[in-house]
Image (cartoon, rainbow, N blue to C red):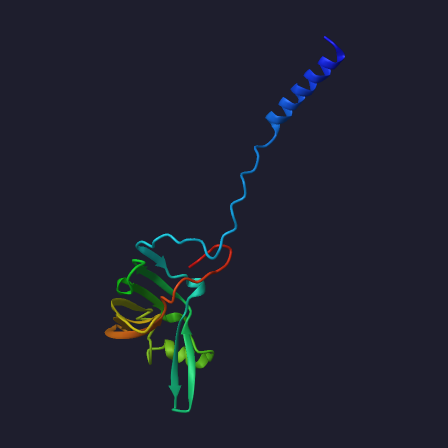
Length: 174
């Protein structure tokens, strides 16, 4: 065997070993996307209300002079939606009445007392939807039973929603 043949054989073997140890080649890059990615057809969905990002707010007119805002800080429950028809939307919500705040400790203490919410006896408020009334684009009314202080009454809530997909960036569309 000549030196030239030995060198060629060594190069071929070295190349084969290097090829066997090299990582596989990266797949070809996908073409750049134009617009948001296609969305799958939505099916029945159920969401737990995110307590870290949800609140139940209200305003009360005080002595017909000022409007006092307030909120309940702890809200939990489920929202369901079939992904196709707004009339399928349903809500089952529980609000912790002990978390009421109007940014005035004296008033908040009075609201938690037996004078108003009596949170010692009635620590929660609940809302269970019964039907949806369609409205203008992106709006509807949610009709359901609100139970507060041991009394249940039918109420109608105005809702903004269903306004189309929201692009939250990085190919994540809501």
